[in-house]
Image (cartoon, rainbow, N blue to C red):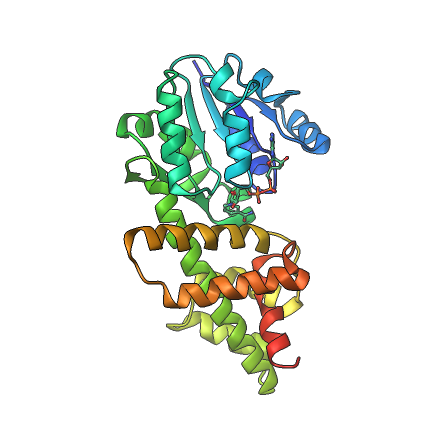
Length: 292
Ligand code: NAD
């Protein structure tokens, strides 16, 4: 029988991901805070639920796709939370980006109630979620990973078991470090090229084809050229992720010299009021420093 999925958190990422599960034939009951997102789930063939408790009742698998650690903790613990209402043997898959330690603590609390847990954060952005081509990095026990693999294959194309609980989040933290530094340096190149009077579109084409090419340069090209900073991935969320990678690296004694600069620049963008914009808006910070 097809597993019954409870999906908690139908935002920028969660909505299209849940819809891909519906397309793959899963039964999906969903809960989220915005009513229009529940209507969207119903229109796609899912069942809207008024609470976390209602969504997880009778589910085989519970997926969470929430903004940050406090949201996950609120949804997991507490009287009307997942741990209190999911049946024994339920597999809880957290696909949000949170601290590795939060995933480990959740796995321990869930084990005490007879639940299984995987941390399975993703990369690939809104487009990756819509197209079902996400990169999914998974921490937890291999047997649980194998149980979840068909579901992951409905959401992504690169699906990798990284190790024990929390290791998916550790890999995601490294991903966010690389992406932040990459966006920042691409933004610096854009401002330099523009100020130099070079045809920016042509310049980005040729950069993309050489050693400077990257997924960031390809996927954020439009944002840079059009100054289109509609999210996408909000600077507020990347600020959270720079905090996660900074703490996790400090805990193991890994130095992040460029990461520290990128974290400062992400924080500065937020302080300048750009927290609600896509992370490609780091360009605005470089422009401010350059008097553009
Ligand atoms: P979002 O803010 O668009 O969506 C979060 C959803 O969680 C919202 O619909 C909100 O209603 C819901 N929610 C919050 N608290 C809730 C509660 N108590 N009960 C039920 N629902 C609740 O965020 P997003 O952009 O979809 O990102 C989700 C996670 O995925 C974040 O951890 C983010 O870092 C990560 N992520 C995002 C992207 C991206 O490009 N947006 C890419 C990769 C990973």
